Length: 234
Image 1 (cartoon, rainbow, N blue to C red):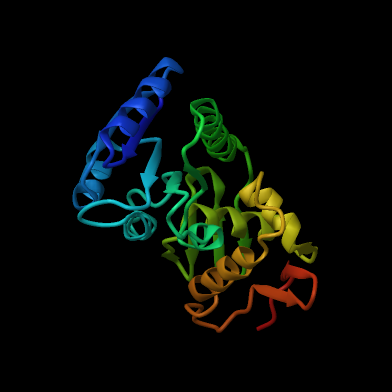
Image 2: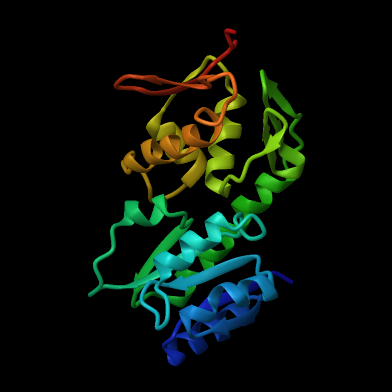
C-alpha cells in the first residue's frame, strides 16, 4: 500500500483528501504545522507528499527546498497545492522541485488521477533495467539511483537525476527543451522551457563545477536545446 503524507493546515481539506485517497487504496497521514513537516516526512517515509503552499510555522516552498536537499528524502515526489488567491509561479514550483501542482478548489477525481500519474512515473523510473553509464570520471548507476563524480557520490534531486540519465543515454544527440520537458516533467508543462534551463544550470553546478578536471559534460546548442558530450577531451 502506497503511503501519502498530506501537509495541509485546513482540517476540512485534509479530511477530504484523506477520505478520497483512502477509498483509492492509499494509506494517508497528515501534519498541519509546517514547522513539523520535515520531522514527519523522515518518520513516515511517504511514497508521495501533498504539500500546501501556505502553512503556519514554515511555508511549502521552504519545506520543498528542504526535502530536495536532504539525501534521505530528496527523491520523494511532491504535489503542491495553492489557493487561487495566492500568487504562485508555476515555473518556480518546478524549479524548487515540485513534481506537479494543483489550484484550490480542485476536484477529488483529478487529485487522485494526479497522484496516480506521479507515482506511476516514479515506478517506471525505478523499474527500468538500464545499464550503468560511465563517461570519464562520471558514473551513473540507474538501478541504485546513484551518481558519482571522481568517486564521490553526488546529491541530486529526482528531476536532476532523471535529466542527467536521459541526456547521458543519448550522447551526441541534440535534445530540444520541449523534448526534455515532455520526457522529465510530463503532461501540462509544454512551453515552460525556463524550468529546463534552470535545472540544467543546477545540474552543471553539481557535475561540472565540482569536476576535478574541469570537465564539461553538457553542451548548449543555442536556440535549440542541449547535448550530452559523446567523448571527453583531456
